[in-house]
Amino acid sequence: MIFHVVTLFPELLESPLRESILGRALKQGLIEVESHNLRNWAEGRHLTTDDAPYGGGDGMVMKPEPFYRAVTELKERTPAARVLLMTPQGVPFQQHHAKRLSTEEGLIFLCGRYAGFDERIRTTLVDEEFSIGDFVLTGGELPALVMIDAIARYVPGVLGSSDSVTSDSFSDGLLEYPQYTRPPEFNGVAVPEVLLSGDHGRINAWRREQQLLRTLLRRPDLLEKIDLSAADRRIIERLQREAGQS
Ligand code: 6SD
Image: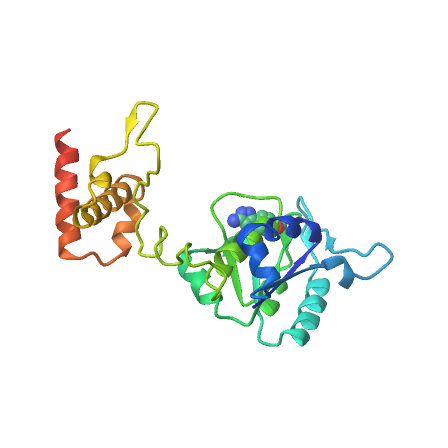
């Protein structure tokens, strides 16, 4: 799979992708990442990529023509590529988007700077708009990196056998259970006895209950979105009764 990133700061994309798991995937040719300088498609003496807004107001607006020429050229190379725009006004990016987009042959990320984009970029060039959260950044490069990381994990072979795509938080809609490793006691806090018991039935039951408890306390919104078994629902009712008592 190829990720094209169109940006005024192509170097911002370099080092974070070349380390660790994604670095290995790049070396193995499982994924390719190319960052392209939007300035390459700018025209005029100053290679302008932004301009003042019609109607007045603060800030500058990204011009449509450089993005148009970039998308046209990159689609000649990767005709089936989908074009994604990074913007706080986009659909909130979620795990299911990462999974779906990982099956594409290529993705073209359009990253802006300044106040925003000429509306015709959205309406004529872009397939989908994404936001990585309700906060405002200075540009779309970090959102593109975040999305590439989440998407690349689903490309076959990218995760080694020890890192599971499916057992992490969100893949079953719940937060992860607490994990412990050695030593058995640290800073006066012991590892829960059940984890040392060797009884995998009890361990699995404890882990499921911890997942449900943690999700109930930290992200109750997630519980509304998933289909829980009758057994899980009974555990949640008990946890809620216990919380009400304490
Ligand atoms: C002007 C951008 C592009 C500025 C952004 C995306 C999210 N979730 N927060 N901020 C953003 C994207 C900000 O270019």
